[in-house]
Length: 550
Image (cartoon, rainbow, N blue to C red; front, side, top):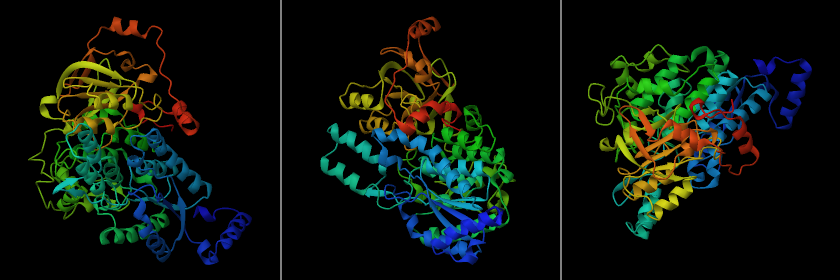
């Protein structure tokens, strides 16, 4: 074990400090296992980890390891949403990986189990697992139960839709407050197919978490038992010197993308998967998502792509393994891939589909192609992303005049003031990784569009990103971003914009000569930033490369 690979003096010096914390000497010579815990009191997706932390420690001790709990940042996107603080959420992904590197490499620990559930935390943990390449396991927190109000299923994202309806006179204050009060009845990852559940599934399909972990109910007996199993498993992996980069190949990532396409997963996958894969020396770019989207049918949708199904329905139907089983039966995935629990082919033995209305067979898909498309044209030469599984069929081709705003809040206020009408193409720019900086998600704007019943009649184009819960004709992740000289920067009010999702194109209807003329003397809009955000702005890669400092 590397924790015992130093000189005798260094080990004794280290042990003297362990004695100060009451550690028994016998424990000091066992495999030293980091429990990287993103628990905090600002994140309902992580709040319940305190229920199992002692169980995990006990399981590690019983398996012959020395558990060492260390903290890591764990931001909740929802808490930050609709504030200037949202600029910190995407950069926090890279910060999570850096904190883990500092704690685990700085202390030369032997293995690590990482506890996280949420949007940027889980990909940050996957980045750390690849970079450090030591025995690693991610234990995710399970899903929150959906809320109910007046016999309707609701989730967090319904609160923003309800606010727009309330402000617009379409809903009473009593009903609006009732939705707010009842939207989040338990802890856990928000129960729609947003970024959190997509990333937890990504970790599982990639092979870095236990089978079934990403579709188990938070705080359930099954989840608590799984925590004990995870504690035991990380010791086994550490003793076996199981390293991620020795087992997880490009095919694992391809399987993960195929899974995400099959369930209409979060568009934030296009940001996080390239950043995670890069730490393992694997290149994943926009084109691969589009290529695989054309190969993989959409076979399961829950909210926001389905109006009434949520994570409990997906779990009951069989969850992630059942989706993979349906894809495998059609020969669409590689089951020779390996993860922390062995070969995928072994994990899929005996898996059954308990509700083909929730998880369809490939022979009866919801749609012939997966849920994400990459659009290109003179607005986005490197690509832009749309979750077309959440777009109504008649809106797949859209043409309208531009209404241009320099921030989400500017556009949101215009929407509330009824300045945006059916047929408009809203352009919100300078919300990219460098322009904002930090690339906040524009869920608030699109939720308000839905609340005003305009989601089938208004398009949004932005260099910002979206919540996994976003629905409607929302095109984002545009690269190059406005700040970096992308053509989004010179679009003017009234310019006609054409969007053609089936043919994967998006263009502003002006000539190349006019574009060049508008760039004469152009300078990017500078927005205030400080500290960590300023560093991120200077160092981050373009959106289509993962918007990462690494």
